[in-house]
Amino acid sequence: MNQGPGTGLPEGAVVASWRGSAGGIAAARSGHDVVMCPEHQVYFDRRQAPGPQEPVPLGYVAGLEDVYRFEPVPAELTPAEAARVLGAQANVWSEVLEVPQRVDYQTFPRLAAFAEVVWSRGLPAPAERDVTGFLERMAAHYARLDALGVDYRPPDGPRPWQRRPGLVGRPIDGSPPIV
Image (cartoon, rainbow, N blue to C red; front, side, top):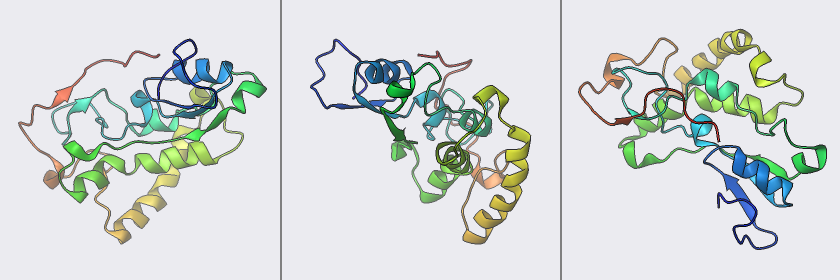
């Protein structure tokens, strides 16, 4: 569910806040447990960069840095409200990802950024996070992904065999609305 107070949520309902953070904030403030999964940051079927080289031109851009700046527990919540955030979830809708390699490409390395953010305690505010340090740590992780045969998105863009030139898709340009 992605609903807030006053929408007839039964007592004890858990809200998956996927349209943005506002629904999760409202639900936590009204006493519901929440799983944060805002599409503009943690939907991995979305594009990782602008431009025609991305193989799945769908939605807004949600790049590696966007995921690393995801805040699973919104700062606006009081400590009691923040305790209502059960966790976070990244999503990959695979109906547009026709082969396992495409799932790899869309998911990795963004899943590493997501894991670091949701599993770490005491990270700075999103705007103050050490993105450069994270990207340096990723060098070792890329080597692991290579050893495992994961067809991830390289930091400098898709490899020639990962591209799908001419695929129109449904890209949305600009910044997503923050809701």
